[in-house]
Amino acid sequence: MTSTVVLPGPPPSASTALLTDQYELTMLDAALRSGTASRRCVFEVFARRLPDGRRYGVVAGTGRVLESIAAFRFGDAELAFLRDRGIVGAATLDFLAGYRFEGTISGYAEGECYFPGSPVLVVESDFAHGVILETLVLSILNHDTAIASAASRMTGAAGTRPCIEMGSRRTHEEAAVAAARAAYIAGFGPTSNLEAGRRYGVPTTGTAAHAFTLLHDDERSAFEAQVAALGASTTLLVDTYDVEAAVRTAIEVAGTGLGAVRLDSGDLIEQAHEVRAQLDSLGATATKIVVTSDLDEYAIAALAAAPVDAYGVGTQLVTGSGAPTAGMVYKLVARADDSGSLVSVAKASKDKMSIGGRKWALRRRNPLGVAETEVIGIGERPVDDGDDRPLMVDYILDGEVVGAAYGSLDQARSRHEASVAELPRSAHQLSRGEPAIPTAYVGH
Image: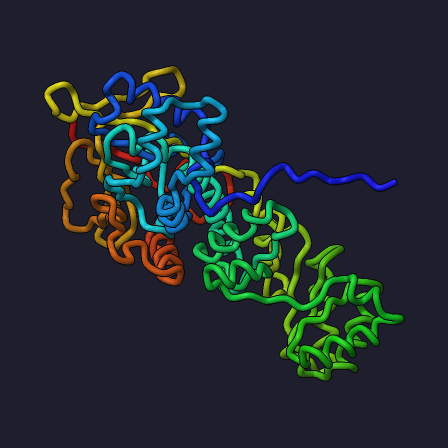
């Protein structure tokens, strides 16, 4: 006897409006009732601290935030859900039916490094329009920034050797797409994820897994089939059975022009040396060695002296290499008083204090161009002493996206490279330590 599977409901719409916490809308409901929803407010996204032991973080996800805000609309399906559950009242439903973000958003450009207290994103609007973006903004920035920050440590450890993103099978299907995008910003090369290629233009790559070898009667047959389909420039996986025998067979099948061999298990350092010597002895001096197998920044650094040409990184990348969230918060830092003047407000609870006031930021550099301090102006823009670099750009002005303010993915990638390059040498150490530069607040 077969059972009938009952689907939970119609597929979700393209709206991002319900990718949020209920309390965002109940706060809105109460503020509309009390008459405070129209008060001018400034919300700020920042991290009180970096993940334990990290020297810097990398901003990623802002482009996705803008896409999601554009799709933050309450259509008939979303309104019906809220109405049927009794989550908000009629006046709030009317407000949401016409919701469109009408404020201003500025912040750090994608690829930029950040530090504790950096005003990564500043949202200026009335309370009603700004408060309900909190969960959506944080869910994107906390994930993408965590991935980019981990990726930056990995690409830093890899030096000039390319890193390949291949973590799709180790995370949520949509998180995999976002992770590939964030990793590319922080210096990774191609991804195995095709949707990241289609949606964001990240270059893609892929050849074969162990299953393809096991499908065939022997390793030679598998290699012959792969080379016939993909050409001799392909990468052959050589650790299914015996590595030495596989390398020999690979060169016999593909010739000395074989693109690469991949090692996915065992002592990668020792095997890389052995395989390099074997390839050279067979005349395949240009054949590269790609290593995979649960790599993180520490494993990559340990392989620096090995004859490795590229790293394939999966699980540790898409989980933030021990820091799966950036720990960012979205706080109200200023609001209009009864006279309409903007006043600073801040949470003062133990261990979760924040600093009130609208913020601006610049990076103070010495005459050699090396970053020294993250300077945060409170209530006014900090003064450039001649070597400083402004950090914030406008994203949305009065509800309209400012051109291509956040630039292309390749521009974000170049920005990351330049931002990391200006940090002091201590930033590139993988050992536990304090942020590479201090954060200093100026103004009132």
